[in-house]
Each structure stands twice: as C-alpha cells, then as structure tokens.
Image 1 (cartoon, rainbow, N blue to C red):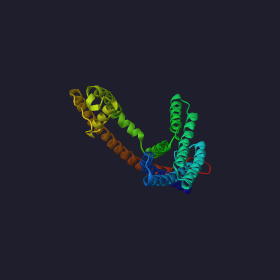
Image 2 (image 1 turned 120 degrees about the vertical axis):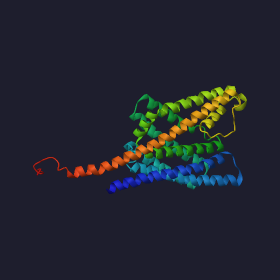
Image 3 (image 1 turned 90 degrees about the vertical axis):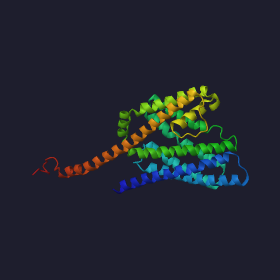
Image 4 (image 1 turned 30 degrees about the vertical axis):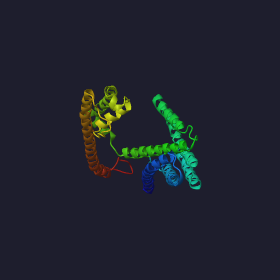
Length: 319
C-alpha cells in the first residue's frame, strides 16, 4: 500500500511539475522573441535577466520531472532503457540549470537548449528498435532529422541564438502539452469516443470541410485577386476565419463567386461546430454512465469474491 501511494505521489508530482513547465515556457517565448529583435541597453539587459531566471527555473523543473518519471514505474510504464536515459538527462538538465545560474548568457542558454533537443532523440531510437515497421521508422527518422536541423547554424550571430532558444521553448511547451494530454487520455474511454465518431460520420464531415477549405482557397485566390493579393495563404486565412465564424474583417470576398463560396463555407462551418459540440456532450454523457455502471458493479464483485469459499481441498473442505 505504501509503495502504491509513493508511486501515485510521484506520478501526480510529475504531472503538476509538467504543467508548471509549460506555463514557464509560454512566459519565456515572448522574452526570447524580444531578445531576437536586437534590443539595446537597459531593455536588453532586463529581457536577458528575466529570460535567464525563467530558463533556470525551467531546467530545474525539467530535471525534477525527468527524475520523477524515471522513478515512478506507473508513469506510462517506461522501459528500463528509457529509465536509464531519464536518469542521465535529469543530471544533464540540472547541470544546465547550474551553468545558467553561473553564467546567464545567451550562448550558455543555447547550449542548455541543445541538451534538451538531444534528449528527444534516444526515445525515438528506442521506438525504431522496438517497432521496425517502415511507417514508424520513417516518422521517427524524420523527427530526428528535424531536431538536428533545428540546431544547424545557430552560432551565426546573437539573433540566431535567441531564435534557437525560442524554438527550444516551443519544443518544451509542445512536449509538456503532449505529456499532459497522454496522462489525461489514460482516464478517458477512447472506445466510446470512437463509437460516437463512427455513428455520426464526424471524420468524413470534418475531412470534407478540410477539402472544401483547401479547394475554395484555391478558387478565391484567382477569382478575388485584388482582395487576397493573389496569394493562397491569404485566401486560406480568409476561409479559416469564415469557417470558425471568427470573421476578423481584414479581408473580404468582393466577387459574386467569392461571396457564394463564403456562404457555403459559413453554413458548413456552423454544421461542423454544432457536430463537434454534440460529440463532446455525448462523449462525456457516455463516460458518466459507464463510470456509474462500473461503480455499481465493483461492490457486487467484491461481495461475490468474499462469499466464494474456493475449491474443495484437503485443507479447505466445503461444509
């Protein structure tokens, strides 16, 4: 019982520290962008000081969460190899935090960022060794190449170092978000969600919406050249604003074809938004019913187990 309690505490501690990680990262991103803009004087010193302080706290938390994941066996059930790697990088993250504390400069922060980026690679290598299907190999190799590419030519100038720090912060935020979502999804009955999606044909409807946005953007690029400057990205942005019913108003369709397409996209967008809302409501309704049934079945199972005398043996005869 004590061991289970310790594992539960470590798992919850890792999850809570991961949330703080993501919050700190989101605070650091604008500071890194400000440092990349080439500020001078007092403003630059203030930005760099805040960035160093937050990055120090960030890598301290990275060391803590990595250590907790390595010691908590219930946390996504990591392999022995992954636990050893977590122990190693926990120490490296702590060393990075100490280095930032001693020398809070942009090159030192960039080196700490390289340590984090390298920490993403071993798990992908383990995944390739365990699952040698070509799809898994291709995805993991592409991810590793993307990580290595992010560290290419970062030492050109101070602006490149600052932008690399921003990339590292975005990577940490994304990793933290994925980790939080993975912990949350463990408690969700995804089979119920899959059934609801299949019954409502939601996947087909959303795929149709994506195809409509892509094709309508292409048409609007040529029919409303003046409104969208003849660029596909502007037309795509306009279609997104229409479908989500945001309606920024920075660009509008002026031709008759463009207005007709806008009406079609708007109506389709309303249907999709209503569909997604109904799926979420039905999913949580089914989850509530399933948990209520499981809660009622558990005491009955315990009662049957307690009343069962077990098989007849010489030491345990049935009266």
